[in-house]
Length: 466
Image (cartoon, rainbow, N blue to C red; front, side, top):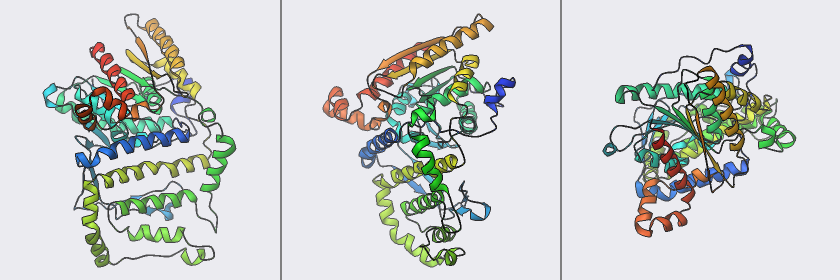
């Protein structure tokens, strides 16, 4: 049943160490950088192939919402605004954007939704789950399930991340409850998302989960996820984020650069505030003093003339699917300067750290049914460990409530860590199967492993009788 979350678990002294840490550190399940790059490239390129066919709708609202964006490395006087940023409406296929979530309703012909699947993606790619995991989520929606995919920023603090996710989810859950009535909620997570689902089910009791499916569970410490973290990554990030009288913070320069790129992507001139900040940050050596108070002002007539000039090109690129994909890619990259600043501020491990995540799950995990999916060629996977832990959690619950039955199942599938991401959008896959045949299409478009994942999830959901 969809029930808005009110508070985190009331906890004992030992619990409070997990629920309310004094330091906010975490690298939200940082799988190796190379693997993350492969995931992002695979997901975005798969969508790009289909973009021109399906005709993404990418609209700019006429009523411009002026807003400022804070950069974590900047002081109050160094706020970088993005006043030129239009409110962007990004609609991919049948996806909707609602209360900070991406929503996909099941087809009308399947009848009322069978359940609500709340999805959380992996590190980095979880910022754009409606693109990265389109085949997986669209396939589940076609089978009659309501899908809510909540994007999140990679951060060193699991608990704050969970709380932000749930704040967004509660808003859309309340809306859907009014429209469809009570629906059972199934948590579905991949990689970092599976860790977050585990924590939500263990530490946030006002957010019930009828069941959870954990794909490629990975709860390694930072030093194991990134072997050179202490020796290379942390010192490098600290250096990049450092600033002094003659040197601007590299993370802030990156943030401003991404904001400039986003403005260019949607065919508009950046705001005067943003251009001024860029001029201050990018001053050549020897000119820092002159650039410190530099201001840039683009006349409104010139701004409107430029945007009118490039609008036809922007519209054409939008129809081809390039503008929305580029914009989402830049949105995803905006997590990087935030991570740099967190490491520079002292983040060296997850919060809660892996040992405390396990302790919390062992003590308080509440989902009655759990499916663990492991890929046999995934070096990051820790499904063996989480399976044993959840079996123990089930025994703990039965000691307190003998009538409660906890079911933990596991499925091993061929593939690697990025298997759920390696697939085209569902409609392109269906067209390819019509032309080539199912087996040939899956082989040539490399989505046989993602398809197997869908079938395993669908069968388990059917058997769960939610």
